[in-house]
Image (cartoon, rainbow, N blue to C red; front, side):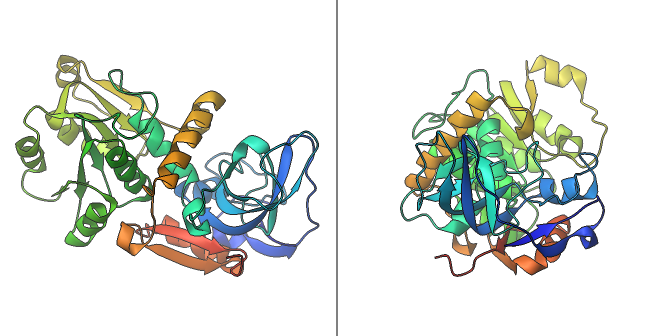
Length: 340
């Protein structure tokens, strides 16, 4: 089978295409014939050495979708022939989804609801589960997402045109929240609105905090934040009392917060890193995300506010470079373009 591998960390030139034997599933494992692999910032960062050294023959990428074609001893579901989406394929493992077949623990393979495309399945994983976690850490909010559970609450998604921001908008709107997002251009505003945001505020404008306060005089309940290092001032001005800031990304290493204003708000600042979340919470989030897919709440593509950028397997390096360069939308790798 064809697989993308690398033996060392570095820029995308370390990636190469090679033939390797098909893996066989062991107890509690399934093998998935990968149709589409999704690329996230975490993938190029890991490849470049952000998580330390890698094993020789490592295959990148956490997310994907395809069809189960073999199961190991003890596996009852999913069954051979079932369409699935994949999460955390490379977490604490050296084998990701940038290959024609991947063997995974059964809990990392989730049935894909009828009618959902492989493109959608490969776009879930890291973005949707991160967004779910960010929306469920508020002390006064729900631990699970479902229609209506965020009714009466306001969510601010900073950077709503990114993959996590896009998923956060969709999930928050599906759960009944009023959703505000910050963007930097009319084009990104159109994408965020297509995703389901009720209001899009240009953070490059004269006073975005005043605009948000005009929309929500009492402040926002939850902020799903892409960069608190840059956004601390804005967040402090728009957060409601006892509100929560869920931080899932950053632009640097040093965060300075205005201590007294955040303390006066009784604010909670919750850092979100999917790889440290306990398995039970991941399982619950996976179930909720699958329900949202079944309800049609997480579409992808230009019309849904998440443009898709496609690369063949042999151009995985270019796909990684596109994500690293900040491609707006979702970067996908067609591993088996004719999988359907």
